[in-house]
Length: 339
Image (tube, rainbow, N blue to C red):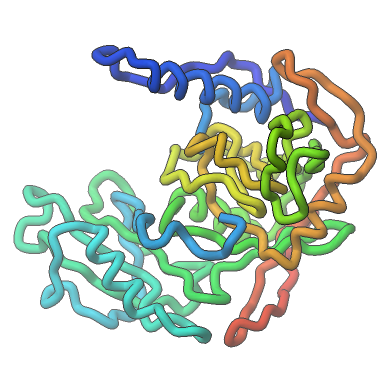
């Protein structure tokens, strides 16, 4: 059954001082994307949120979660290791995670950045090591917590699996760009089930994009829109909206939220025309994209969402979460039970 969102789209532009052609253009793109990727009615929130390569955005992403203190064995003591910004603390951790394989020396950073609240602790940057980066050790969280914390995944780490009857889609998560999104995904893993998680929309590349996801010159940009769309919400659990996070551009393999979730999609093509309109929180490993393509070719029926023609799967494709164990870059799987 297709999930339909019920609230109307609302523009996110807050500045009324400058009304330029560029701003109007952004507004038009924003509205168009919210139409093509969002069903017209459902219980989901209407807000619009925003790498097929497994690299992040080249270092620009270095985000954490405020009011959160992650625990773990210290590899750098913050009392003797200080910076002015959380980004510098994050980058210091990343600098200890540059090996070609194996685990990172640092996979967690904790920073105190509020001068008034932190007092003598201001600027402290604690670099830590988790026993298991997919289940980070949380000390405490809440408005009274002074710390900002983030996770770093090294090469071959931070990979989860969405197992379907057509194969398992291995997804590399991007905690540095979308820490709130990744935290939610790790919560789903801890539930050990994802009843209700499924793909329900499938649109191939058509005649507009080649096999590598590049747009064919002079071809239209959809429909079809070269994506498979579904829902990441376990039945029986309360879903909290995901805040809009750093937004790398959509490329072939990108995994991103529609709005604030739990609707999400996997892109089958590069979509630079969508700019930074969706929160990208992971990417399908290139070798698994043939599975996504297979799902995109399943039988569909036409539907209309906000006056846009879309292709809905005749039979939804459920999936299970798998926890992926890695050993020096090699993938092995450990099943996470699903109902």
